[in-house]
Length: 207
Image (cartoon, rainbow, N blue to C red; front, side):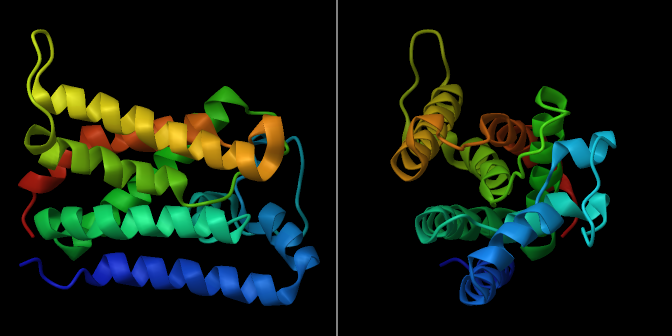
């Protein structure tokens, strides 16, 4: 039986609380905070300034607390809770938190590298959740897919989970936002890669 996933639950409840607070504040507040607390690549480049904006160095974290819709929030938190409690069972609370934060920063870095002049705020926990998904694929991948002729079961699961996760996010973006999608693909990829890279080193650290 898995221990109580304290960090998983804490992150999920904090994210839900932030959404509820902004939701009851009205659409104007939600739009303002998307720029003030979301990741805006052009702010990092110095192209624009955002009056009252959170410190740029913190925006990869504050952006994870913001979501554009109930569906966006719900999908991310359901996935995070399932994956997070499993990964927290392997890593423990502290190292899961490190993974989540590292995923958020890796997602922000990837999005910035691809679109450094973008003025569109990137919000949502998808990049950080992608890191947890990447770690989950490493820890549990050999249990969920048979080995193929050319690829190990772990590699097959990693590729399948990455494709399914990004595909579902694209589908949600298409349904909610139309053909433009509104999904930060590179943030997902950056977070996922961070999870793959950090999974084994974090597992070897002392709890």
